[in-house]
Image 1 (spheres, one colour):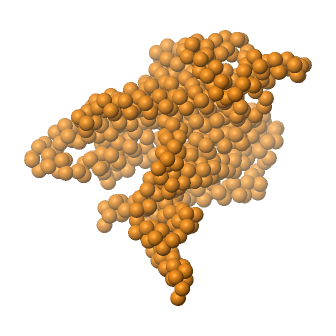
Image 2 (cartoon, chains in turn blue, yellow):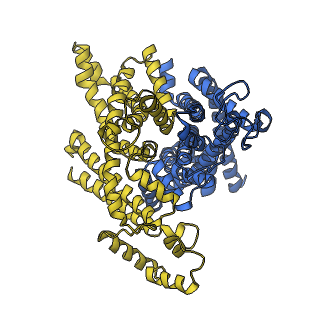
Image 3 (tube, helix red, strand yellow):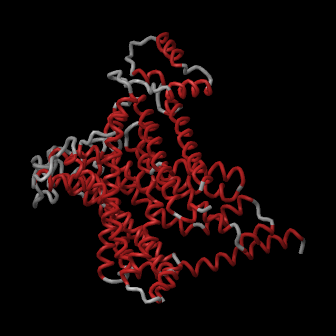
Length: 304
Length: 307
């Protein structure tokens, strides 16, 4: 065979061996995950959230924005399962549509954080020297402010709206992903499979996206899941302050803010959105913790 | 030790410097014309007047000149005036910053007092039902939005039971906000403490202490506890920063007169000089406290002290 053909065959062989190793780990991972009771609960909560979000128009008893479908500030009862708010809107319907917003906020924000963060981490870890230094320094500066302060500053610049709140929370999350991916790349970069693939002559892009990226996926999955939880909390916080979703949007944080003034007369208006946020965030936290335990080898060893 | 201190201070200074740079050019990132943003002008302002303002503000000069003009003003204490009332921004911020810092520190103390023992004991009783109960509470605590918790606590203690005042200033008014924020963070601290204590309790020096026949209490409190505390002290800077972030929202819930509430109002009103001001102020406070706490930690950790 020609020299070029040998190189390509070597490359294909190495990549095939990586793929085989990965499939076995996958199956083991799922089994460990579902053995964990917390992870099971978290998984159910997330599935329920997705289900409610997708079927909102069909399962919602009323229009979420329609005023006067019931008397104002009516307590939870047969007619309106969660009661009504100050404009006579059905709370249950608003909560259901709010679930949709919550899911979107969480996923899009994490999408932004992860995409940008992973890119930065990959490039910094792979390139090394000056590039790595500058990038990780920038990340360190961002990191010294907490995610909420960054999100607050970003909304201050962009202006209050749900879209900007999502972008702000997305930007705020970048340092976490950048750091985790950067550390992971530093480790993977020294491993045999990587050095071998590099020696055989794979190009930069191929090395980064075909080899480094899949192998840093596991920590990413963990912080991604936990990240959805923090993103939802941060976005709800911004909306609560009036800097995110604006009325009459049925976003849970905004609903909490609106319900404040009726705390004495109609406490249910402010109670239910809070419970919902807590439940959803709990679900993602439990799931994320479960994933971490299923992946982390130390835990597996101690189990026997 | 000296090298460590120098490094931390330089790193902090760099962060503040980068922030001044970002803040100086903030206005160019904001959607809309900078001059209009700064003066909230009506439609009747003519094009010449806008150009005049632009030149007056130096917005047409090259970026390095603009930056130096800005830094010059800042260092001399001129942080601009609010758009509405034309009040000096720096003074307004300085009045409120102590309130926020007091809230953040009080909350941190509450969080440590509740979270650390919880995490410590959970790690010791690992695997028992007690551990499960504590950690379930902790994960719930981490998931509950602190502003909602504040509302619920306010409803319970201030409105229903009337034990505490609803809003305002003064020590009694600090209780609910500090407790709310602290409780939320306690869960975080509990989880952190538990995982680090599990590692510590598994280490050789603990096993040695037990093998020497020391009483369990001595092993726990004299040896394991010390190591556990070191981990937490190392994180104090970061935890304080988290508190500052949380304080912004909590101040809003309890109408606590700190920087947080002021900032949110400014964002709503698009009061640009105040926005510039509070971002910079947050940066300075957060960096100053973090660096100080890191240096204190350096003095406690013998590995750093002796290097």
